[in-house]
Image (cartoon, rainbow, N blue to C red; front, top):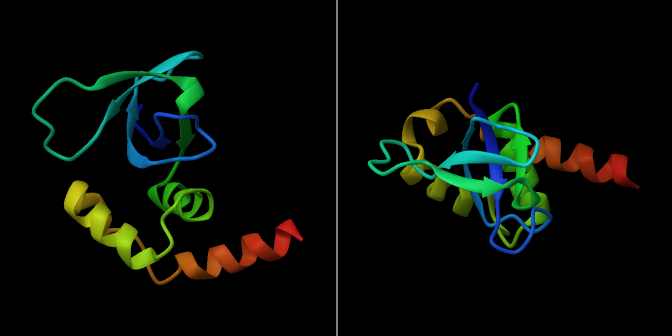
Length: 106
């Protein structure tokens, strides 16, 4: 089963990238870095990976926990890395989710 994920070279609480996770196990998973990737998926330790059911959830986590400050930057990145999947994202709804999440954290 394929899921979306964030991953980082440092730790999973400071995500750097978004990818697709495959062969998810307790301690590891394989990550696809981009659409049409020609080389083998990379194995990652789950200490550096967060798994999500949807791309929107992944994007929201990335925006709230990473150095990405603008949704437009992340949208541009995702459009070049996973263009087919990015077309289905409701980019206009994500800022609303961010506001709700901030309110719920108070």
